[in-house]
Length: 251
Image (cartoon, rainbow, N blue to C red):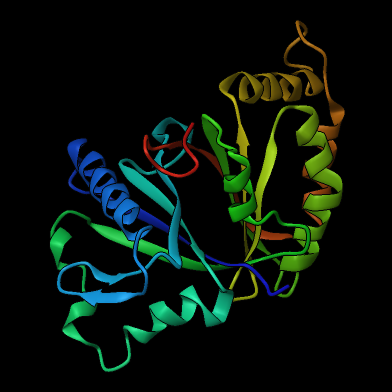
């Protein structure tokens, strides 16, 4: 089985205008829903490449109060067929810099966008399998971390073996373990959970710190933080994402 190749994109909207992320996510989910019916990829004027193999599996509004710069949208794309499938189709549009590669239909809507190609690590679920199962969660935990050069896959293996069972006990389901490609210092993980499970996890951690005496402590949450420092070499952050209605991973 070939490696899963994904793309995550963070889009921000400035000056602050709360309608812009709504407008962007509505536009994006609508046209990608249409793409699910395409028989073959097509390069179009204004909408760039349209293809069912470049699959918008997640469209999220970033929950600003958890640490995102406001306002922001985050999207997760599955390149069906891996390198030789959806990734090749995306790369093909840059050959010759055809003027149709530009998303002119949304000129001036976005302020900036950061795209990061992702390679699934060993033990990472295939998002297509989660969707086939009908899985969806009301919230998603988005981790982005800088690791020591060359330690990305080691960190992700530790997450799978040591952290995932702990978070599973707290109602978190692993959605993806990803090495950020074309660099050797960054990882991304994504987890689905309910709001109640998110809050209970935070309180169990507080209790382990001796800061909450009303709930049961789970010291394993702190143990993982210490273990993770064996791999980390820079910023580590977790933030929450709310799936946009009509997107594939939305309830």
